[in-house]
Image (tube, rainbow, N blue to C red; front, side):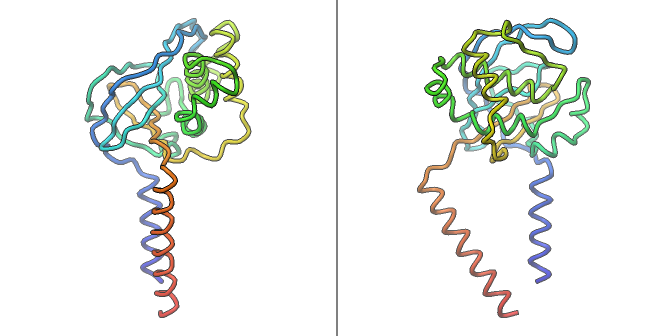
Length: 220
């Protein structure tokens, strides 16, 4: 029984703590619009982008969570992977301006692999979907330090922006993590959604492990 508690405690600590990432490789991106916003009490223009990366052997996508640095195509070894909650509590998030990551990661996790759904449901282009989601991520990260209006972007992108921020069906940030670097633009990286067959195999394995632990407790 004590060993089970120790294992559970170790698992929680591992999930909460940052860990050194495998090589973070930006392989490409899909561009959105250039948007004109008020950021940190200044009128600024930013290019919105939906990035494609490989982290270790996992191919996924990301949205930017950092408006003070840039990133380009290539491989980088100084990124650290953070659970979004742990990242929000980390010293680098204190600013200025302060940054929050949990809601932003929830947005990235929900829409990073579902841009086509937004396109079909809202009648927008891929460029407008990318623009609206990225702008929503920035507003979640920076709060009232970031202000976008209907004049900041196209009408379609602004429709996505409002829909994403007001969506009521969010259920956490899943596998999305913040990849932080002191020299490169921080990214909210979302792995691909597992195929149903992979989920079945994972579920079956978890069930077998659970049964084994239950038998062990009953014998103890």
